[in-house]
Image (cartoon, helix red, strand yellow):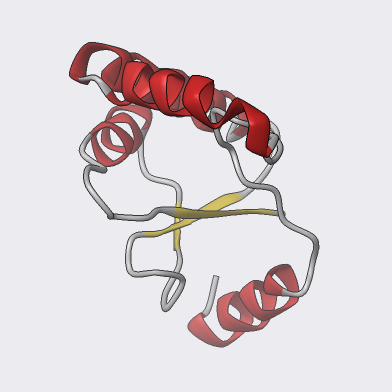
Length: 106
């Protein structure tokens, strides 16, 4: 795929609705703030966080068998086609701290 075609496709994809994969699928009610904090700490602990990253990797790798997936590791500045399953897992499991990954599905 030429760079011009890919850039045009990515621009079209960026206009489509998006979804965020998160451990909390909607805003937590204010009255549950204490429970939220406890659950957040639980999920952010190293063993649980590693498990979540692997689950996300599994979802993305499987989805790549049905749709074209592009990944950005630079806050959406550039996108590349999804690499091999092993490399995809490495990228996702290495995403730590405030680092953000963007995925675009066509």
